[in-house]
Image 1 (tube, rainbow, N blue to C red):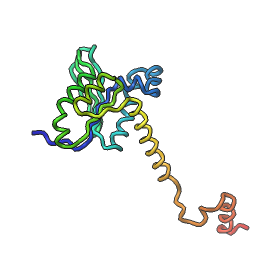
Image 2: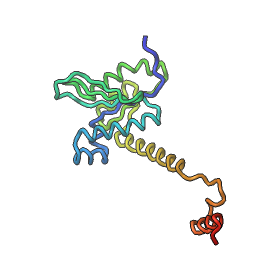
Image 3: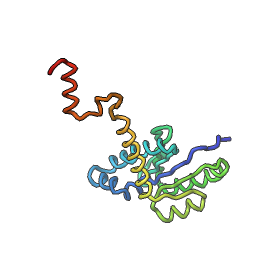
Length: 182
């Protein structure tokens, strides 16, 4: 018997998200698909870690003769490339159907990020929550912005000394006094 999931699981329809995020769409147009995929993965690594999500990004390989490939990027993020003839939509829908009972028993959440209306209706029917690609983009940016502001606050100099509250000219004069210069 598999152990129950406790983390929220997030499935991301990779190409749908790349096509609808303005930043990723621009990267796709300028630098190509591989760079856009890499940027999406990088953004979701940080997002998944900060939100404690078990994220699975799914990319179509339906027109390439390849088996399903899974790459584990971090403990919280995996990337799946579907097998020949399978779309990301069908892969995500099957995963939702397979996880439905387990998620209900463990009272965990299952979220699917896509702006594909047909997929939205299908996964909601399996008990998953739906998040639009734009909503995911906004949430990812919000988390990244919060992390940046926390990092900037932690890099500020310590203001333990009275001299650190002085303007630069006063600090210079005080330093000269300490050194015995007029």
